[in-house]
Image 1: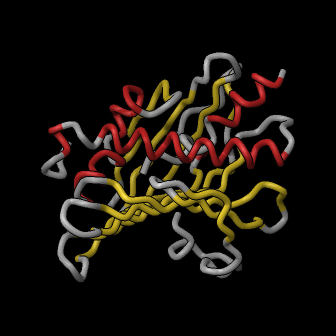
Image 2: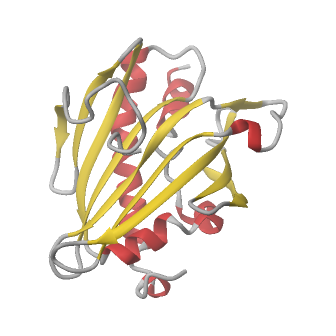
Length: 222
């Protein structure tokens, strides 16, 4: 039973890998207030804060990646290849491209527990950084009404707000900030969900750092 619980929540941060940072979406909560350091290593610092009306926490992680921001953004945008490098991702496809956003569907398959799926609307912005290069901001919210219908045996995720901010940080380095609030469903104690979510963030950063070494991302294209 414990293994099953851990499995379900080990996927929690992969859910948002498709591309909110609190600065963009409207919110009644000050995006810069209430964060507390939960854990820090050489590779990533993870902060948490309470989410109004929920026992699940919001998470924000900051870490440096040894690649230009354009290359890191190309990895985040490489949706069709997610099943090959993002943990637990069984399916990821583009449904629709709009003027300033995309609609994308993902299905996660942790193997020893029920699959999860969701459709997201991912919005994107970029602008020149003061020190050169580009800053990239991707943020998303659920858009399940625009994707496939629910499937038997697959748990539909209805809460998933998150995103990436990628800022140039010196020569060939990117300061990546990842923020997310999500609920993968199931009768899982909040304290366990929050703990395993921290572990999931580290795995997500590891996957991006490994993938960005592929030569095809060096030009920012994929």
